[in-house]
Image (tube, rainbow, N blue to C red; front, top):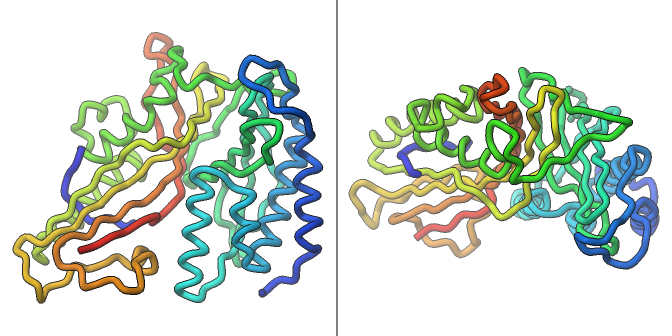
Amino acid sequence: MRATFNRFPTALTAAFGLLAVFALLLSVQGCGTTADATTTVTGPTPASALKVFNAYVTAERVATANQDQPLATEITSSAQYSQVSVDYAVAAVTGQAVTSPTYGKPTLYVPKLTTYPQWFMATAPVSGKGQAAGTALMVFDRSDAAASWALENSVLLDKNAPALNVAIKDGYATALRTTETELRFRPDEVGAMQASVVDEGPHSPAGSVVAAGPLTTGIYQASQAMAVQARAQGNYYSWELEGSSYPFFALATTDGGAIVVYTMGFNTQTLPVKWSPKRTLPVPDGFKPLLPADQVPITKLLDADSTFQYLAIDPPPAKNGGGKLQVVGGSGGPSYVKGK
């Protein structure tokens, strides 16, 4: 789906050396041979998950204190790896150091898993530069026994987000398959429902079952308003929110629904209504550091991609009184740009 719019959207001293950091990370991994999906293994417990969380926070702090990109990427994977890599690439161009937030006490949501991959979620208050930034929901995972725990996703919840109400039994959360059908939407369909509203607005086929909000109708409305302004400047803008190959994670909630964490790509294209070799296309500030140093003037097409991580509340099935899908958290930013 595609429609026209224009939306874009060492100060600290290390507490210890890198060897100590890696030792701390390894100490919470355990050891053993790689297991496949048919092999029963011992999954994380709430206590071991807390050690993973604390080890990550310490390692991230050391990485940013030393602007150590290898360490910063070593403790991340998938969408978060992509975001951190871009952050350091931008820092190399702009000279502005990558920073890390300050985390408060976490709340852990640990499913009882007996196969790989293993994963769990955590929420924690975050702050930066002495000011509260909100609440982050983080997903940690490891693919097999030989792999390190890594931060897969980190999503900032909207300030008005409702309670997540994750179902807990005997200290453990319940993981759901991405193809789970006992929900309003299968977890692997949530991104497509959001994209329908973002691309086409509240009158899209999904408009009646996806709740209005800043990450659904809000993106569409802001984009439409800016599209009018862009057209007046002599340019066409197009966009498409699309799926990614990164994994989905879903946990059951107390009402029979689920929370779902997933990643989407956001592609935009800018081109002139009437081409002229003397007229360049504007490059949004967030993408400028990603352009190659030898970039020629862009006059024909600007193609830009962003990577966004989202958190959605997937209600119970309609037969059980299920409501609308709510996208209640998001994070991310520019990831790629090219022009000609």
